[in-house]
Length: 98
Image 1 (tube, rainbow, N blue to C red):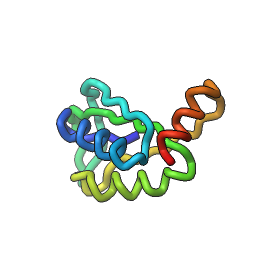
Image 2 (image 1 turned 120 degrees about the vertical axis):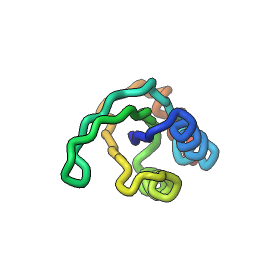
Image 3 (image 1 turned 90 degrees about the horizontal axis):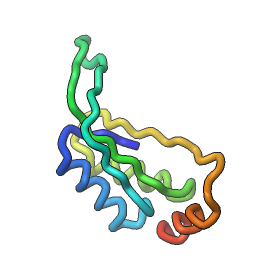
Image 4 (image 1 turned 180 degrees about the vertical axis):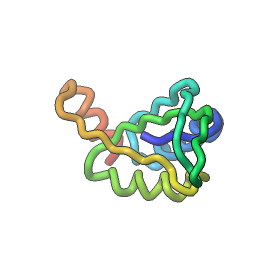
């Protein structure tokens, strides 16, 4: 998962990951309000979340892509392991990220 400050940027990150087969699916969520500390100040901003679905073996490449394509100095890049999931869906993710 990552976030960015514009819908167009979120879609571009999502599309680039799919085109490179680094993720099987990417979902861009409507704006969320983020509150965080940055440069010793508390900031509030609107961001768009991008949830990218990939496999463990493609994670490092996906992270490298996000770091290179993102315009934030410190982009949010968080991986959450899948503990359980539909076998057909997980097989599809595997197939799409080869």
